[in-house]
Image (cartoon, rainbow, N blue to C red; front, side, top):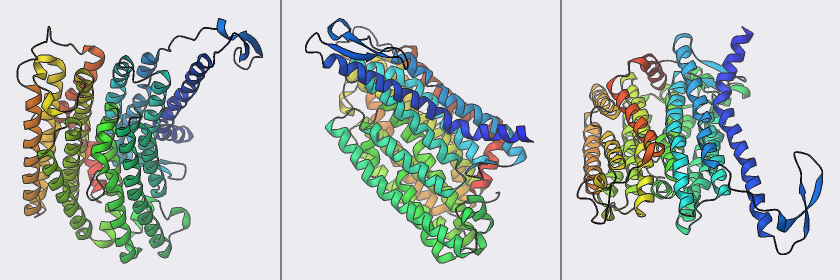
Length: 542
């Protein structure tokens, strides 16, 4: 029994602790790289300085002008070593997936960390997208270094922040306490703000500040909503230690004050909806996604939006039990249709392909929110499948767009023509990722959108479904037309030979597309987990 408890604790802690350890390692290397840069910069005369010899050894005098600067550290290999973080997430997720659907939820530290089927599904999605984004990182950073936009310090700082970002997302997914959930989502805001402004240009810093201001406003609303739910729980006689425990709140939902809970749920939906890219606090998304390094944009679009929406799903379960399904259904449907309308309109006028992909993320989050408003296990199964498929496809799209930006030096759609002829591998990957985002077979989004349509009609919500699908069709047409302009057509006249992207750049793209297609062709190996997760998100199971 004790051994089982220790194993459970390990499975719940490792997805957070592993990326934190990797992040700490890069922090130390960044510090050493900073010291190596400062010492040569201080050379003005052949004077003796004190430098440490060995770890904890005595300091001794070394002539400064006879101590040459050290060569650059092998950051490329260390970047690949960072795959240990997503490997830990996937390994723990797989172990939990084999156990939780059969035996029920597991917890540690007094249910501060808790894993039910919904948690496990999201952990696997975060791990899969993280594996692709981290694998794409070394090649992206090599291109930045070749262009003179990165050095050892900035490369280590990038890895430090990326792995801290992964740890924060895993903590948000694994949190059994709504207060810990809020802290984890806030931590993602702090970390990703530095990643958005990573290149330290005027535009990227402006995007980072915009991201911080808008998302902080959203997180403040979520905090107020969390406080109100806590107040309702305490008034209902729930002990202080369990007043923000999700399982306890669900079990005692019938005793919560409906008026206080209604206001709290509304604030939470608006607050976490800001981090999910939903109207009305959505304006940060296109700027942040277009300025962040492409693997970071992939993480933000592929899983950060979904992790934030998972918080909304947790509160929706409580709200449905206290208020009935009508309140959350109406609120989410209205937000979803407004988000779809805005995304479709902005996609029609878009001239920047990274911003185009950002608005595509808004459109897909609108579809996810619309599916969640339908309620029921069928709708939530489609929503969770859509989250996974969108995460994989959008990761490939953003990583490919980053390679395109380094290849052509522009993000303007009108300046890119004949990409398939220029670079068949890159053009093919970008085209196929957009095909996946359009919801065409054999990719996962085809199955998820069919499921959403079936669930909408089954719930008797034909008119919101029809409006949502019409707006999605407009968005899909805009995305397809602009992508076709870039990938089709003759090669540039000065092209001597097609550009090969190489294995380091091509493998993450190919792996993401294969996983997305496999998930669309059959979900049978994951069906027990998906069904159990949908039951929890729909409030049909605890």
